[in-house]
Image 1 (cartoon, rainbow, N blue to C red):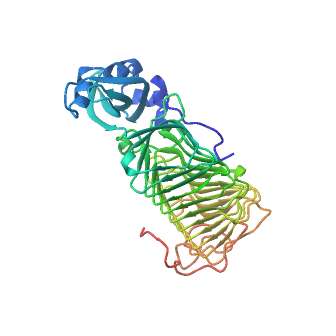
Image 2: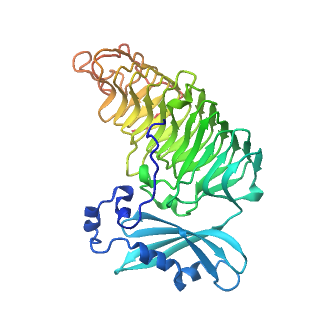
Image 3: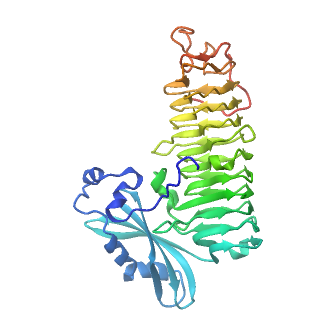
Length: 435
C-alpha cells in the first residue's frame, strides 16, 4: 500500500465546501458568511440561468442551445468569496460535447458570474484499454470521464503534444490505472477546469481534481518531459514492473510520486523532475537502493506548507544531487528502519533538513543543509549514530551543537550525529539560494 493508504479525495458539497482547503465554519463567520453557506442547489440552478448560458453560448455560432449534465457538477472554493462550478455540456446545434467552468463571487447575498471558460472534447475516454493504442495531438484533448485502465497485454503510447484532461472528482473517482505499459513523452495531464492555477491554496488531501496515475501488478512504463498537475497522486506506483520518470513537471498534487510496498522493491528511477507545490514531493515505502532519486528540484511555496520533500518508510533509496527548497516541514523525513544514501543534495529553508527516527540510519555526506528553522539534522533514535561527515551547514564554523561545537554558526544538529569534520564551503554544482 502506498503512503496515505487507499484514501480517495472526493469533493465535498454544500457545507462540506467549508472544509475545502482548510476552511472551517468559524472561518466563514470571520468573513461574514455564517448565515449564507454555499448553496449547492442555488449554484446548480445558476448553471441553467440565461446569464450563464449566454456567457458560454457566445463562444459558438448560432442560438444558445446548451444542455448541461448536472450529474457531473463539481464545486471548488477558490477564495472566501469565490466558488467555481465545473460541468459537462452538449452544444445542441453542433452536437459537440465540452466542459465549462464558471466562477461566481458571493456578493450582496447573491452569486455574480465573474469568469467563464470551456473546452470541447476531442476524444472521450473511460473503461478498459485491452490492445496496444496510441493517443496523439489530433485526438486531443482526450477527456477521461471515469476509471480508465490499461490492461496487462496492452501498451498505451501517448505522443508529444497530446493533452489529456480529467473530469473533476464529483461522486466517482477519476483515475488512470496501468496493469500493462504506459509510455508518454511531452504530454499534458490536467484538470477539466481552466481556473485551477488561480487556486493558490491547492495543496492537500481534499484539493485534488483527479486521482492520478496508478501502476499496479506488472504495470510499467516511462513518463518523460510531461506536465502532471492537480492530482491526488501524480504517480502512484504499487507495481513490480519498474518505472522511469524523467524531465517531468509535477505540480499541485498531494503526492508528486507515491511509491508503495507492494512494488516488491522494484526499480524506480526518478530523475531530473521538477516538483512544484506538492504537499509531499516524493514518498517511498519499502524500496531499496535499486530505486534512485536524483537531480530533482522540490519546492513548496504556497500558503499551506508542504510536509516533506522526500518521505521514507522502511526504504533505502539512493538520494543524490536533488534540491529541496522552501516551506517543507521536513526536507527528508526518514523513518522506520530506513537507511538511504543521501549525498550531493541541497536542502534549504525547511523546518528540519533531515529528520531521522525509529531505527533509521541514513548516510549523509557532502550535502548543503542550510537555513533550517529547527535542526539541519535531527536524530531522535539514541540507539544509532548517523554518519553526517563532510556537509556544509551554512557557515565555515560548522553546525551548532551545544557541547561538541558551541561556536558553530551553521544549522543545528542533534545528539547522536557524527558531523565532524564538516565542509567550510558549499558543495559546488548544486542550487543554493541567496538568503
